[in-house]
Amino acid sequence: MTNKLDMKKVKVALERKVAQTYEPVKPAMQFGFIHNNVDCIGCRACEIACKDKNGLPPGPRFRRVMYVEGGTYPDVFAYKVNMSCNHCAEPACLPTCPTGAIWKRSKDGIVDIDSSLCIGCRKCEASCPYGAPQWNPKEQIIQKCNMCVDEIDAGRKPYCVMACMMRVLDIGPIDKLWEGKFKTTAVGPNDETVRQVKNMANPELTKPSIAFVPHRKGKVKS
Amino acid sequence: MNIRFSIIGLITAALIPLISITAGCGKQSVPAPRTQEDIDSKSHFRATYDPLHFKPAIASATNEQCLACHREVLEERVRPVSPAGVNAHDTRAWYQQVSTYKGEQDTFHRRHLVTHMAKELMNLQCNTCHEGHDPREEAPGSSATGASQEDTGFTLRKQVNPEAICLKCHGQFPGWELMRLPGTWDETKHYFQNDCLTCHVSTRTHRHQVNYLKAEAIEAAAIAAKESGNGADVCLGCHGARAWYRIPYPYARNPWHEMPEGMPDWAKDRPVHSEPRFLKTEQKP
Image (cartoon, rainbow over all chains, first blue to last red):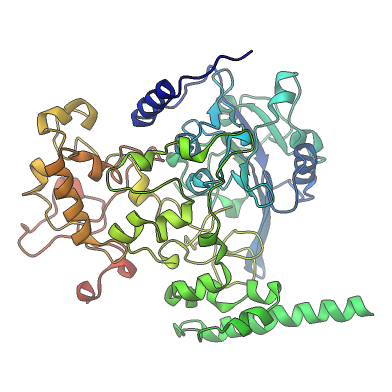
């Protein structure tokens, strides 16, 4: 039996909350994805596994494998960049949500969403520098990757990671992934990991929790 | 056989506009206005490769041209009730706290183009933010669109470059150290009666002189806010109080003729002028 809400109190609390300056959650540990841009063959099994798990209609793609190909013969190149939600340390989507549908878990830093609270204003979609929140035109709501929190809580890895036949997509504590201290099949013995690849928005905007093994043509000059 | 013909048809449909893109490179040609008949007769595939989506034509695209096909961005409204029963009317977003905002919750594009605040203070066009795209995978340089990999008009998974556009009005407060404040604005605002114009009535008085903003209306709103006691809240609406991002935008210095010569410390490593496409007609050389 739920108590009847005092709507006056709710309104006062809501105004206090909205007027506050946003301070991002500092999780005990931050999970993040790692993707090897060079060894990925672009089969999109991760995309399909994600859509299957989340029951997504045509349109929204939580995970997206982007084919980057170019150059002039003989200097041609092809590599893949694979991104879903980057579960940012300081997510832009979170404070923009007027209904509090988005939150960041304090234990592992996963940015989760309860789309049943979404009114479809699409602010989170616009504010995310990495295109993670996805518009579901049928439901008129935003949905996004939550790193399969149910799988994480059950001690398993997300569907996209489990579906990767090349084993180039993985998750782990992001600090260790950036330092190269986390054992994963996504990183080869001579590979180095980076936080940003070419054409990706500046990580300083929201500090995304993602690591890449970059292609030589995808490296960002520092 | 039919499949083969339809594939040939698709390839031809893709190539014709691509040829016109190549032919148009460097000419800054403006595509002819489209009639409803043109739009209705286009297949989705042909429309995707319309030259209007690419540089250089996109730079001169009008809102009417964009909205002829993309009219849903203004037609769609927020859901009155979320799937779980949250009433949109009972929720408040950050922007609704600013005294210059009037009205209910609204969608992102409508708030930037047609709502009261957008019309009063802004002059945003579709191509203020949208500088081009890649119909294949949203990565510059990944298909035969003419965009090089160095193109920064859009970024991976985004049709815009957030650092170049969104950050202008959704970044952090631009540096209390630069303004020689004793602390952050939250810590020190009471020294200034929570009013930016306490100092900025005589400092940096030529503000917002770009073609995507209505400078006079913004000044009037700031003065009205000062008189009504809302003070800094109007300025901070775009300058950090409700920032999406964790860094400030490095605004161009834009010196005017009475300003002392030489580059002040705060403006080092910053552009001297706003981007040429945002300069007002009278500012352009």
